[in-house]
Image (cartoon, rainbow, N blue to C red; front, side, top):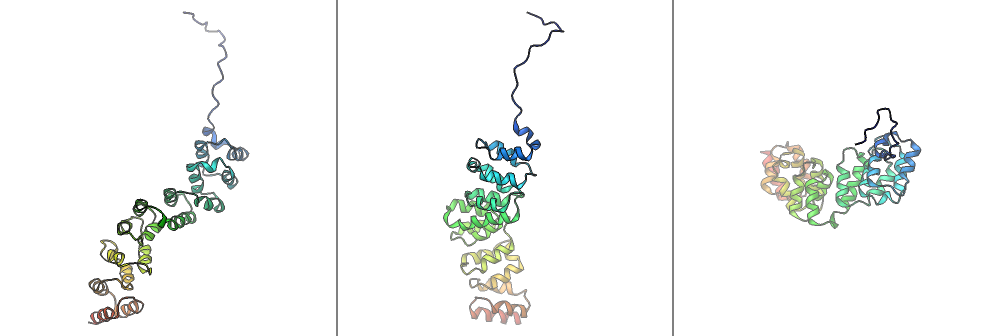
Length: 253
């Protein structure tokens, strides 16, 4: 075995790999970021690494959206829309290209600006009639409150019942749904008997304005309302006149 002398000059080692660009993303200048964003050989991993920078200027984000290669990268496009500095004229058109569950992901991502979330929800709601029953069930269970509210009017009772259990559904969306002209007896009765929603005063008032509430539930919900307020509610109610009269008689007692 040959032993090197301790003072021997070591032979030059072969050049090592260039440090990964991802590791120095935060040190890139604006010019370097712009070149990277426009690179036709851009990879998804690299694009995602850059988009993790919360301080990216709008110019760089716009350049990503002009890169034909980038526009083929699904996860990177979602990250671009979710970036807090992405201009709306970039993010909103991109949203229209997303698949159903990508739209749901955007709408539920905390860092996404509120108006972009609304835009994602609007696109998703506009597509509900075209998606499968299985997708609607998944959206009813996991989607935003706005989407769950729209699915309360779904023609399939299991979808509607799943939407009622959605933890993001709010009282306002329930009220909007039951007051819509297309709200059917199945929805009204389901809300009127629900273990959570049937105890909300404003929802009870909304149900009293519908045409599908049963007499028993109408009597129950009207008992806690002052007579002048009940008269006001029933004035705009679609319930049959005989039921309105009975409610007023019972309340007057």
